[in-house]
Image 1 (cartoon, rainbow, N blue to C red):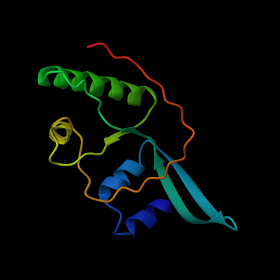
Image 2: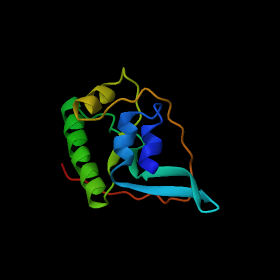
Image 3: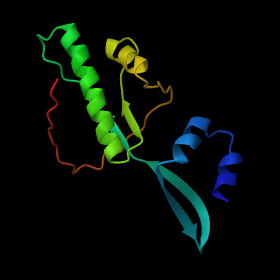
Length: 127
């Protein structure tokens, strides 16, 4: 039934349908036992920003980004998180690097809701 709702709604991008069909937790809102709405949730790791040492050479920065991508991917896989995302502007070299490493630009507007209360944790990665 839920799949037929998606199929009949042409405004849902195919990429969203694929994303919601695997590695998702689906919530269903019922009224009198009848489904009214369903929401597939996908856990994602959001890269807040990159903090480079100001004096580090470009080669070291690239090496560090490669190492961190490997570390982030490992964390995501270990926790069954199917999506890693970051925000950037097209004119930044980091954005071009991200596209070259499998990230895809999404031209839609991102809306965020901060639930707060999550503690910060720091982990080290050796280069």
